[in-house]
Image (cartoon, rainbow, N blue to C red; front, top):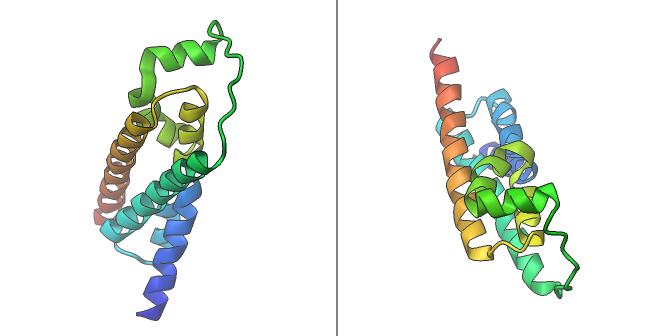
Length: 135
């Protein structure tokens, strides 16, 4: 039982940096796919929550935004939904959250969409692991 806790903590810690990194780690430790997915989702979600907490503690500084740049145009077009669903998988949940906060997107909608994105991509990962193990 003690070894299982260390395995789960390893997957949670690895997934805090990148959601997909926890899946091969958990698979190499012979964990069941559903447990890998749950631990990976928990790690990514805790990282997003930590970013939100740190962002509330650090005083915010007003910057001169350049609304004509591509990043700002994409943020206006796709918003928190696009960043939460695609940013989680493209460059990691914490970095996607930081990017959204830096672009001035509302923290509540960012957190909601990141939670949905983490859950969705974790389900995809669990499905792929289960399919791979059944072959």
